[in-house]
Length: 259
Image (cartoon, rainbow, N blue to C red; front, side):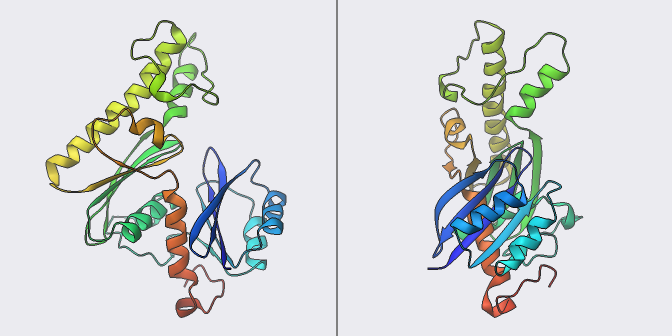
């Protein structure tokens, strides 16, 4: 059985998706993103190969550790991708957005795709039916909105987002400060997403909308537009990129992120 470990180091969380024979079996949270945590994952899930997408300044020892345990690829501007990026500076595209675009092309071939990623930021990523990542936009994510209102005001409280009631149960009309903040952030995000989708509909007649990220299932319930909900799309994109960069045809199973 072939095991592929797909590491996603985001601004809020670090996670690892475990694929066995091409099927996502498990997603692990990495509490501290340390080499010791990675070593523990490798001990319990020996890898046939691994890939890392990181948008943070992670410990370089992690890359060394992964490379010592089998074919390894770090997602970068030099990676082979299953799509083109006709943008001004492709090297500035975040690793998370590259993975989402790869997943859209791999799993929804021949269609225009608008992939919306819910993370520290909300990213809107448009990939056309010819396999070109045209571009998109970025706006603040859920936690960033809560933090901004707390940081830039004197009296608005900080809202802990862990342990919240399901997002669709948050009242539209808040009855106290906390519920007002919750309503503004959650319904504001839903309205923004609906509005952006509507703008794309003015330009493109037919396209998929794919919503991904930890809150995707909740936000989907608040949208007026139909969307595909796939919380694990980023890991599937990393797997697709791993296929391109670490296949025996391209690399003979060796580690080389710059070829």
